[in-house]
Length: 317
Length: 94
Image: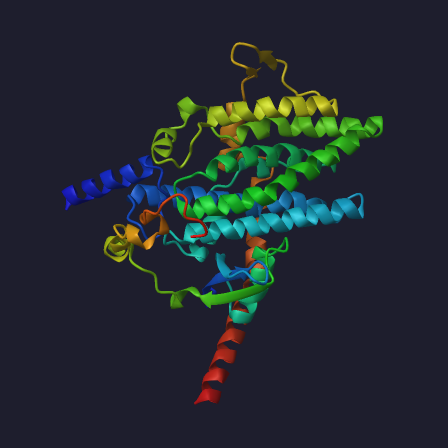
């Protein structure tokens, strides 16, 4: 039996090494399954919780153009959450279990959504930086080894690029506006810059899962590589806006062909992960309220479906 | 009462003339709701002109452990492909 498992694991690794995708009904090591359930569901929860800080501004968007764009973006995030929950469910966990893990706080979601969105400029910064960082991660994940996850990512990446562009356009409009508007844009960048860098996770040397994840081709790049890519592509974008990235250590390094940048406040990072960010409690309360208040709808829909089905049966009898 | 809505498989025809293709899955209480939800989840950017929904429990899938015996017999039948046949280069329209 044990030999058998070892053979299966060797064959599994060989398939990954050959670049094959793993599909839902294929044999997989238990740890591969568990890691994916954790990662895909965290990703799904992030999409769902990610609707909250932006939903906050839909009714106060400054024009109809901005409002329809933000509404469409938030709707996309709901859709992305659903694609991802479906992908997680192929691994043998139910939707209700996944939701429960979010609501009772056992599952994590991206810490970035535990920061508040205080001004309209934050909608620009979130689209530009937060979606920008997410896209870097997600583009990598379109090549991940688990088929259902990779396919969800392809769909998400196609839709996500408008999210970042609409955010940048908001920033651009503010930066070309009055002094006060430009200050508001700079303030949003100041608050979202470091949390955006934190989105890539702990430093490689503090990320114990990275090695296994690379071996199984769940990830193809490390946290630090992705973070570097984000910094390198974002600095010139800030220059176009005429905004200043709030990092005195940021400077071009010719030797490595990329920017050097300052140290992330890792105490803050771990503190927010542990639930002590400015909005952790509020986000969970809001999700719990939405779930509880929707209970009667879920039950009524089932009752209606059952009644219709039983009528069909009695009619055909 | 804690009952989960069943899972449905969603098939979308992107335009007339093309076949329905599997787009993904979602939860819905009944078929009608599955079509509504599929509209919202899978066709937000005009990806479809027609939707089929099938409750997942009615799909029978082949067993991946049996894929050898199912699919490998086709492997050594190269004579089913046009390039298997050696014909002179000057031959046209064939």
